Length: 106
Image (cartoon, rainbow, N blue to C red; front, top):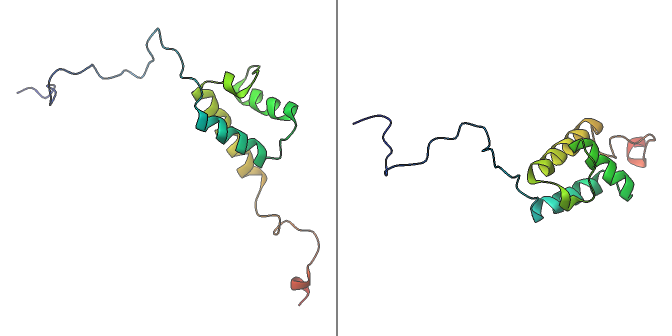
C-alpha cells in the first residue's frame, strides 16, 4: 500500500498555495460589512470622508463603498483598524484622565 493513496478514493491534488489562474476574489460578506461599520464607529470615524479615507488607506486604492470591497480586502481593513486601536490606547478613558476625582482625593 502506498503512503500517497487517499483514504476514501481519488481526491483532488493538494493545493499549491497559489490561486488558480481564473480565480475571482470572494465578495464581501454581510457580517464583514457589519464589522467594518462597527470598527469605524469605534474609532470615532463618523464623517463619510474620514471613513472612506481610512478604508482606502488600508486597501491601497479608491473605494466607492464598503460593498465594493472583496472579502480579503475587508479583512485587511479590519486588521489595520484593530492594529491602529491597539497602539493608540494604553488604557481606558478613566486611566487617561488629567485631573483627580473625588475618589483620588480621599
